Image (tube, rainbow, N blue to C red; front, side, top):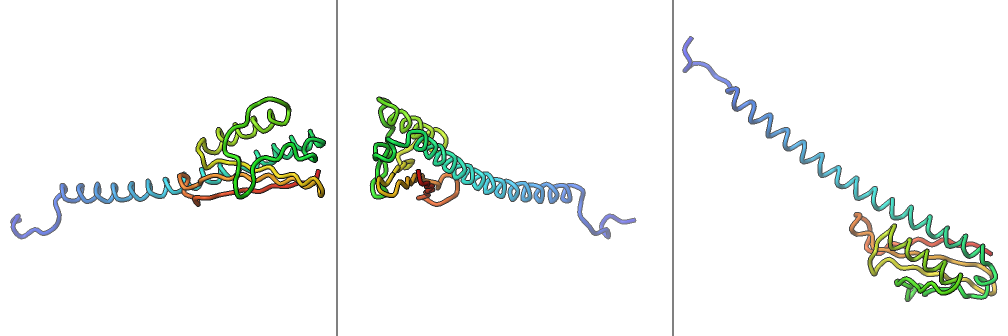
Length: 150
């Protein structure tokens, strides 16, 4: 049998093609994996925000008189509170713990902010948490709002 008459690919070419296809698949899997991880991080931030919003509502219920008097109020929607308050009494202690938890569990940057607004007439308290979710693949401005009647 004459070598000049044979047609086909050499074993080296076949192995090179197999490696190339493998690298392409690994790259695609890696891209999809990164998207899933960012999505999971965004869900984690949202979950933490809900938990911390409910945590503050529980603190307001535990110190109902101060909350109804408006002493827990912190920031406004137009100008949310983004710094950690000094721990000087029970109200500021609760606010301090809450803001520390926001910064530690969501994001320790200037975009992680909170608002506590208790209406002295209706006795409805609204807790709003803001954060930047871009690094986790979400929107730049995210917020969660939870409320309760005391």
